[in-house]
Structures are given as structure tokens and as C-alpha cells.
Image 1 (cartoon, rainbow, N blue to C red):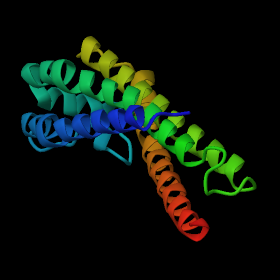
Image 2: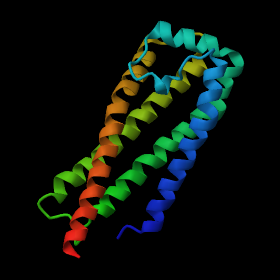
Image 3: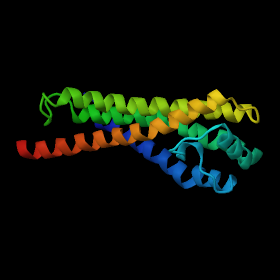
Length: 180
């Protein structure tokens, strides 16, 4: 049985890391880069020239800040958020719960695969950004392309992951109310 304390702890750490990034590192990096968005927030992707302009605009201080303060938090976030969402989804769809047996298997697949895909893409993106920061000013077009593709694919996967979890939660409470 998946203990609720474990799930809530994972979700709390996820929320704390999100808050840290949203309130501190992302605005700081935006200021340091003269208003440009960080790689994570470039939903349409970026190319080698975009990446070079951004890293140049950050300057030495901004690149150091990205590598030291933002990247470790974002790596931790990807490493905690995926498992936390998976555990929450598995708990909602566990045997003996309100969700019928016929619905449970495909829903469980989505609740595992989507957060896992999102985390893998985010970790890939972060590893590529770490390589870009470490190799500056010599950027690899291949590394930038992989980072950009991971960013572009990550966001729809994350939205589908949250939608699946939200749908499972709504279904759980709706069906639980019917049973009670």
C-alpha cells in the first residue's frame, strides 16, 4: 500500500521547489538576461543562435547563477515531481478503490508513463543546459537541438500528465460518492 505521508511529502517538496524557482531563480535569470526567458520557458524551442544570444546576455554572473542556483533545483524538481505524481496516481487507482476494474489499467498506464516521460525530458533538457553552461562559449548544435526538443515535448507531456491525474482524482471522488 502506498502511504499517504510519502505521497504528500513528495508533493510538498515539489511545491516548495516550484515556488523557489517561480519566485526566485526564474525572475533573477530573466533580469540577468535583460528580460529573456530561460530555456525551460521557451515552449516553442530555440536554435543555436537563440541559445548563444541568451547565454551571452546572461553574462558570467548569470551563467554561474544558472548553474549554481537554478539547475540543481530544477534537477531535484524533475527527480521528485515525477515519482510523486506517479505515486499519487497509483494510490488513486489502487485495487479496491472506487475506480472500476475496467477503467483502472489504461488509466494507470497513463498515470505512470506521462509523469515518467515528463521527468525524463526535463532531466535531459537540464543535462543539455549544464553542458551548454560548462562549454560556453563553444556550444554544440546537437546539444542545443536535443535540449530544445526536450523542452518542446516536455510541456505537452506535463499538461497531459496533470490532466490525467486531475481526471483520475475527479473520477475517484465522483465514484466514491456514488458508492457511499
